[in-house]
Length: 154
Image (cartoon, rainbow, N blue to C red; front, side):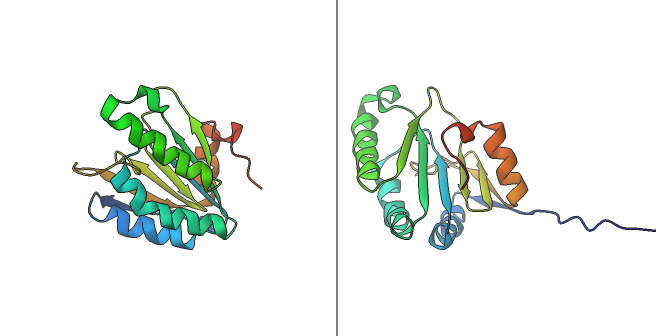
């Protein structure tokens, strides 16, 4: 008799080829927050995304990066990670280290990205990422992953 109108979140799957086109659109339209959890950071991928992250920060978007401490990386990757992190800190991004981090997550305003793709280092691998639009899901994920300990919603 009475029907509840429940909005179902919009969700789509992406692979390593289609992911970055949509992710870059999301970064370009960010208004409040960008959170990226990526265990690894390499020059190639980082410098592709850096202009979008810097532009967002110039427009008042809070950028938070959670990654592994560079000391946890193989020697060849350690310097790249250190240099990229220093560049982010110069740009006013907040950087956090999580030991043995393996999650691949991004939150851009009310969009959650999750899957197997290392957002700040992916280059030559077959991956999957799910994009879900839902403020409720964003809140759940921030609470579940305990991101709220270093990221406070305004």
